[in-house]
Image 1 (spheres, rainbow, N blue to C red):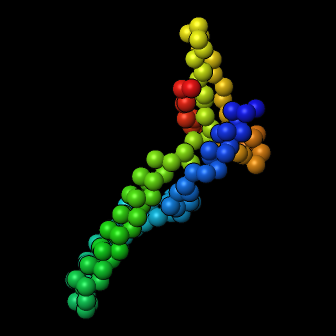
Image 2: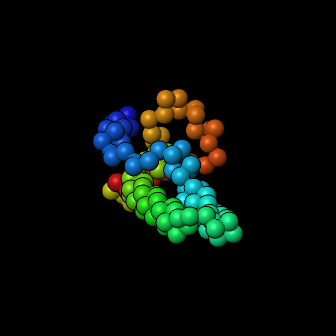
Image 3: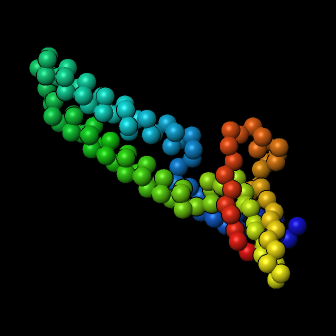
Amino acid sequence: MSDTTSYEAKHAEEKQPLLTDATYDKLKPAAALIFPALITFWISIASIWHLPYREEIAGTLGAVNILLGVVLLVASNIYKKSDARFDGTIDIFEHENGLKTGSINLKNYENPADIVQQDQAVFKVNKL
C-alpha cells in the first residue's frame, strides 16, 4: 500500500505535458501534410493564375509550419522525459538474499478497469 501511495504522490507532482494527446494528434498531420500541401497548392495556383503575393503567402505559411514543427518537437521531448507517458510502474525489489520480486502499480485511473480498453500499456521499471 505504501508503494502505491508514494507513486501517486510522485506522479501528482510531475510536470504536465505541453500539449494534450488530442491536440498533438491534430497538429502533427497539419505540420507534416496539410501545410506543405497548402503551400504547394498556393504556389501552383498563384503561378498559373498570376495571383499577387505568391512568395509572401507561401513564405508566411512556411514560417507558420516551421514554428508549428518546433512546438511539436518541444512538446514531444517534454512528453518523452516525463512520466505522463506511462500507465504505471513495475517496481523490482532486490532482497538481501539476491531474490528479486516485483509489483505493478497503475497510475491514478478514475476507473482502473479502463486500462483494458487500451491497445497497449507502457510501464516504467523502477529497480528499488
